[in-house]
Amino acid sequence: KSQDMTKTNREKRDNAIRFVMLANIFV
View 1 (tube, rainbow, N blue to C red):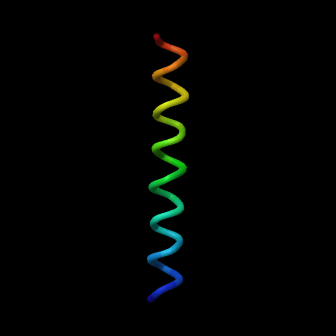
View 2 (cartoon, rainbow, N blue to C red):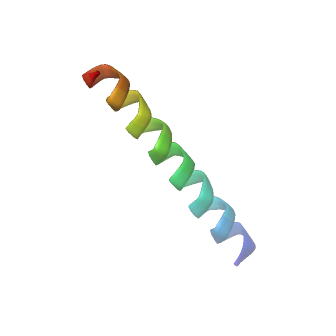
């Protein structure tokens, strides 16, 4: 289960980075 948690955290971080990048584009 630890690998799943790490993968989930990585996906959350990637999603956050995409969100910030999109926000920067729209701003």
